[in-house]
Length: 127
Image (cartoon, rainbow, N blue to C red; front, side, top):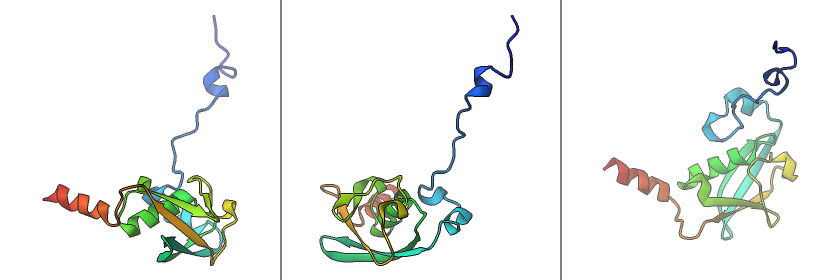
């Protein structure tokens, strides 16, 4: 029996190619540049300003979270970001949460996580 190639499932249902979803260092420079206007954000941990950094409003919070974790010397999964008391879902873009330049993002660490702990783990692996 002949199969109609135009109607075969692999022609109709295309699986999306594995791609870059803007997570951390895999995001290209072009992708980051084309992400809208700047938003200078302040990141606070336990009421103390930890860092201020400018991102593009079209960038995903996964990228933001990666950069914050990197600056604090902890793992990506060891922190959560909150805006106006609500946890920020990683895949959403800054603009999707209504975050604007000048806004403050609260950082909450997982229990037992200490700032710089990633750097300490890397030092132990090297020695």
